Amino acid sequence: MPDSQTNSAWATLLEIDSTDPGRRPLHDRLTRALRAAIRDGRLATGAAVPPSRTLAEDLGCSRWVVTEAYAQLVAEGYLTARVGSATRVSWSPQTAPARRRAVPGPAQPPVRYDLAPGLPDLRAFPRRRWTEAVHSVTGSAARYDLGPPDPAGHPRLRGTLAEYLRRSRGADTQPGSVLVCAGITDGLFRICRALRAEGVTGIAVEDPGWGRLRDAATSAGLRIQPVGVDQDGVRVTELDRTGGARAVVVGAAHQFPTGAVLSPDRRAELVRWARTVDGYVVEDDYDAEFRYDRRPIAVMQGLDPRRVFLVGSVSKTLSPALGLGWTVAPPALLSVLGSANAVAAPPPVLDQLALATFVDRGWYDTHLRAARRRFRTRRDVLVRELAARVPDGEVAGTAAGLHILLHLPAGTDTATVVGRAAAAGLRLVDLDAYRAERAGPPALVLGYGNITDAEIPPAVALLRAALDR
Image 1 (cartoon, rainbow, N blue to C red):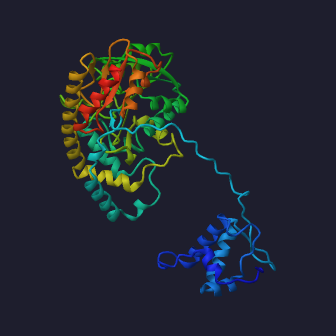
Image 2: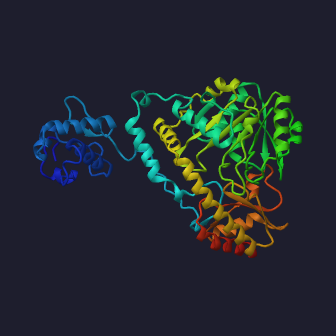
Image 3: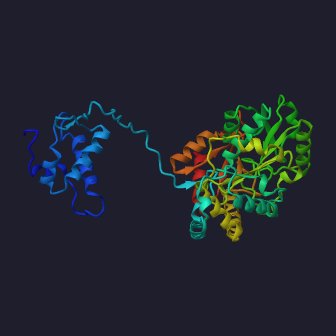
């Protein structure tokens, strides 16, 4: 076919969808049709496309539609236009990046029951009230709220969090000392960067402990020093043997993953240590709202706000998908903490305002009360089932949080047990996954946040089977 000719076959070739012309502009549909014809090889490399006037007449559209489509494809590199010459196809499969064929890996069995720690009950997320909070702030947000966000967080949320932490966690804080962050990991990374800027080179971490904490400290340039944990929490006496560490991260209210609660004597001893070495304590308050057998323990931060950072989030109370957390910082380090991660953006302002509304209207407290009742019942079911089916195991860390520790008889190959359980559709986590040396007495960390009460008996039955094989 000569370059300057066209006929009704072009309408068939281009497959322009005309069944719903109101959904997408005609020039956009023509662009998509031409692009598809080129990529599929229906228009070969070097082939000329009809002049815009001719193709417009054939398709029954304006010439502008065709010239817009041609211009877009020239910009994308599919067509080449030269003055005095036809517009031709310039794309070929050889110029496109090669597509690597996906190599299928071994099929993973579906997870039927999830006893891994780390998640709250996602089924119970308060969708209706959170939607109301988002709708409310979207309609009422001031003009300046929609501009560039304050790096420290929206003042309204900072004030709300300060008041909430004072009344519910016994914190000694004001709005100016609260910084909004994207979660505990983000808060810890900023703190570690700020400590490094202040001349701190080493930081002690609990062993066993949270691996992402170690990653945050390492990425900030700090030297990691593991410190042991017993039934009373972190062993403060070991801090003097850490080779000059001037900071330590602790889970005072509920240590992860052992579940130990830092005793009153060690709290006081830890604060004295920080004063002696001119250092700091970083208190990870990740799930302290969930305490079942007595009232929640107040945060350590209230003992010495000049030496103790406090970090928390809604990841364990609402959902990690929200990406909302906070850091309460000693006054002397507020400025350096604010600039510790200059490239990180704070959480979206509307989400911050939604959380402030959710807390201010009392919905957060209502949600936590219901969650405590639900998790207390679920913990009791899990402990009861373990006592019946795994009587040779020893349960620990039941007073708070969303997980427990199951100590197993000496010689148990926990890695093999985890693998057998996974093959049967049960997700478990070995305590060794949180140990610095990756070896120690056999134990499993069993989470019960994101599993239903009815699923616990069959899940424990699968655990028993994995232990027996």
